[in-house]
Length: 599
Image (tube, rainbow, N blue to C red):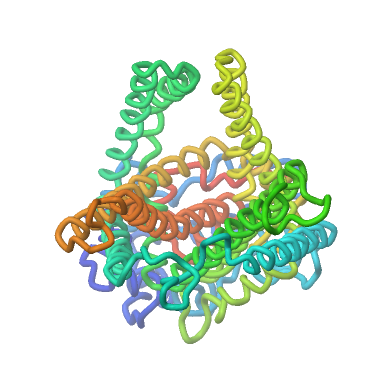
């Protein structure tokens, strides 16, 4: 039996994912799992062979009470019920018996919220943060919230002053429309052909991204293995290219990356089954809750608008305060002032961009994905809370905004340092100082690695914030404990999933760029008679395609990480609510039954 058939809840697959997860009525559900009618109807022989099995269920539930001291040794010895299939290293297995006794009145699969004890290893008993997905209404990290609001307000005031002066002088020859017809721009402009092209590229990008996700769902293991091998080959190819062109600093860096990718290739292949299962589950969740894609696309629109705003602000600052420009009056203009204002604008832009992206992450983690893990799918009698996405967004953009700004500020400062080192590298290379250029390049690479690790760490901290309403410091401490125990598993899982999704975005961008080229080739618009606009149009097509792919991928990545956090903190929640799915995860990842050690 295939993985999809097993996940769909039976040998015949009649119910499918919808019925297994409770999206439709499932009249035979109680007969299949024995949760409503009792185990005596479905497992008469099993009860005779194991007369003490039902008596062990209360002990198993007590075993997962919030520990009062060091982790109990029983967690290390936890085994599935006797007679169940052992881990086979593959998904061809028979449905298993639940790990926990049936709850009176049902739980996730029968429509009601799950009944479980507090098994969070870090968490609710001693942090005063409220219940899961319903944290107390308190403002977290208000100092950083005030600093963030002040930074955004300062950027808005500076932008308004600079852009007003820029508009007053007509944009120094820029503008919109044909100047001969009353506009402020030049007569050379892109026509309706380009509008049609970009609309077609956007539509194609969405279709290709959806098709790629369907392929990933159907051929998950093959795609993960192929993309992992392609990544290794790409790193080796870039290293060889840099050696050929004698770009020594880049060649040395990619030599190290290529060696590491080759070294870790075989060990990462062993962890593909868990990544495969979590990726399939997340794609299935998004299929029934497409609002997650709406959230990330709205975030993309806001990010794009912010980038345009920042670009025009930097141009206007340069025009207004550069000595000798038309808008420069008095003695207030200087190159140092221009550099300082652009630096501040860049800082505010990067910080705001980080906050927007992390608000989207918290909205997804604290909304659909967190609600699905803890309460199950939405059904008329319970399950996933109504308006979970809206509630999570309001929480992330108000009460938790200070915590998000705190973590985003750390990454922003590291990103600024990296940009400064890259500028030093380019300056030293221009001056012919190869030693200085190599040192600056290595320093920028090290800072970039630290920045990437902090950003990866913060992703799990933001999930803690969104699920439990914690401040940043408690969330970071709990994330540190989680990653100390499961850090390698999380890193490898994210790498495998991210690699598969990244190649999909690249393929999406490439095919959109091909469409842009073919459109220009066969329509031959008047503005491109000499081919002068071919490169920018193709580049824009590529960027649109890759952006749409990355936006959709970000939703999948958020779901995979949220489920991983839930399995680390509260594994028995899923064991009670969906025992068949939990058994599949246990078969591929036996450590899931241990739980993460508490303080």
